[in-house]
Length: 336
Image (cartoon, rainbow, N blue to C red; front, side):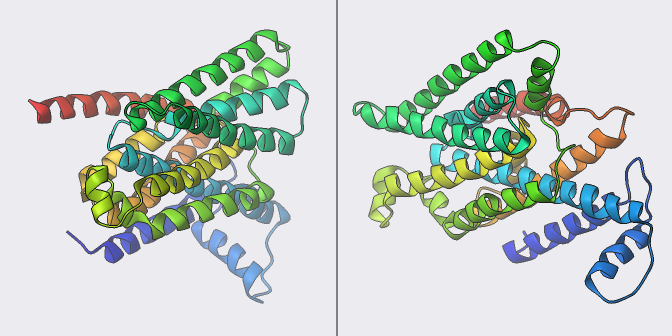
C-alpha cells in the first residue's frame, strides 16, 4: 500500500484535475485553455481580454459551485467516517444524531416565514447543532446502560421529532410557493451557491476537518474497548465529544448550504475503508478527498445530464441504496 502522504497527494491531484476539467462543462461551453487563462488573468497581469459573460460564468457560477461540492462532499464523508469510528459501526452516517433532521426543520421554518437565503442558511445551521446537542443532553441524563447505544437512540429520537415537525410545516405550507421551495431544498442542490456561500461554508468546514485530521489517530484507539483506550492515556468521553462537535459542525454547515444530500457520509467512508484499510491516519483524509471528488462528479452530472437540473439527493440515493444493500450482504458473508 502507498504511504498516506503519497496517497493523499495522488487523490488531491486527481481532484484538482477533475475540478479544472469540470470548469469547462455546462450549458455555456468554455475550453480548458480559456478557463485556465481566465483564472490566471485575474491573478497575474497578463492583460488578456475575455468577454464579461465568460468571466462571470467561471468566477461567479462554476468556481463557487466546484469548491462547494468539494467541501460539502468531503466534509460529509469525513464526518461519516468519524462517526463510524467513535461508534465502531460502519453502517452509521452523519445524520445519526439528528443533525440533518434539525437542519431540515430550521430551513423549512425559515422558508415558511418568508426568510431570505441568509436566514434560511442560518436557521438550518443553528437547528442542526441544536438537534445534536439535544441528543447528547438526553443521553447524558440517562445514566444507566450502554452510553453509546443510548446516544444513538437519543439521536434517532431527536431526528424523528424534527422530521415530524418538517412534515407538519409541509402540511400547513402554501402549496403554490412555500411547499415547492421546501421540497426542492430537502432534495439538495448547489444551483444557487455563490462566492458568499463558499466563504460562509469554508470556516466551519475547514476548522472541523483540521481538528479531525489532528486527532485522527485517536479514532484508531477508539476501535478498542474503553478500558483499553484509557490504559493508553485516552480520555474516551472527551475525545468522543470533540469528534461529535466538530463532525456536527461540518454536517450542519454543509446541509445549511446545499440542503439534504444523503448517503455520502455512509457510502464514501465504507468505500474508502475497502480500498485503503481501516487505519484512520489514511482513512480520514482519503475519505475527505474521495467524498469531494464524488460530489463534484455527481453535481456535474446533475447540471448537465438533462435540460432541467436534477436534485443531488435523488442521484446520491439512487447510487447509495444499492451500495448499502451490497454492504449489508458483504457484512453478512463476513460474519458467516
